[in-house]
View (tube, rainbow, N blue to C red):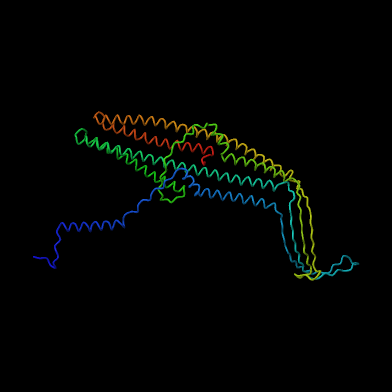
Length: 457
């Protein structure tokens, strides 16, 4: 029986081909709309770029800059105090005089006053302090020193931010290097699993040996998953420090371990005593304390003030006086004044100021000792970190030799799977320890630089 409408029947093979084509088309069509966006390429950064980017985007430094601007504004305000003082006023007075007859005695003729009176008085005054014991000069100098201290505080904030970025950078570097070692170890374990499976198929080892190597791979994969989680956390934290978008993936470059052993401990300490902002700020604070003492002493000295005044007197009662109905008077004067009570009133103020000056000196001595201790501690930690690298390199050479020996013994059916796994694990841990030690040595070096005030070079 012929098919209706001359339509040929679809053979089973053809039907499967058509359905397969339709199915493929639908899969591609849906994939175009459902596939995830390709991951953004990771941003590569070296340490110097990271520090510069962090300093550029730091909100802390922007806050420090406002403090500097505030200190400069205060300095300008003190400078303004040395400018001439001026004032102008215009006063209207209205007087009601109910008793407008004044008679000094019975024999004297009475004086008749108006029942009310109006008057206008205009005043223009200028004053200039010629001498006031140099108090304004000392105030200017002291405020200028505080401005310099604010700048030093900003420099200290810079060092702290640079160190935080450096620490985060090295922590991310540790995780990256550890992940590389994990990947290398997984490759070695996979090769070992294939070998053990061949041995099992040949009846040389038991299924338990294969399972042990597979368990070892699972444990290493768990370690890799933990490292990846910690890496993502560290990348996020570093993005915040650098002012980058939260979703930015970062890859830090490999770092050579710096060798600072050619510089002596004495040289590092001398550098700290020269460059640390804490000591520089204390030096400025000592000068400010000296100016405070001088200012208190100057307060007990006489002052000399020049003044010029102009008056416009209009007793006519009209805002615009008639001709010859107003007086214009100008005066100049020189006033010498001495508040000699300051000789005994300021006695305890002066004593307190001198105590504060002594405190600054003691604080500087204490800070100097603390800085020396800090530099020495960081120097010794740095040397220890370098020595640890040397010891771990020796340990790795021994672990590699042990791993080769156990691999050969396992291949020759002399060593057990447990012995083989132990050798691999020991080598794997030694490699990770070496990468961590290299990063720790680099961070120890930058900690030493920070303690000398040279982390930003």
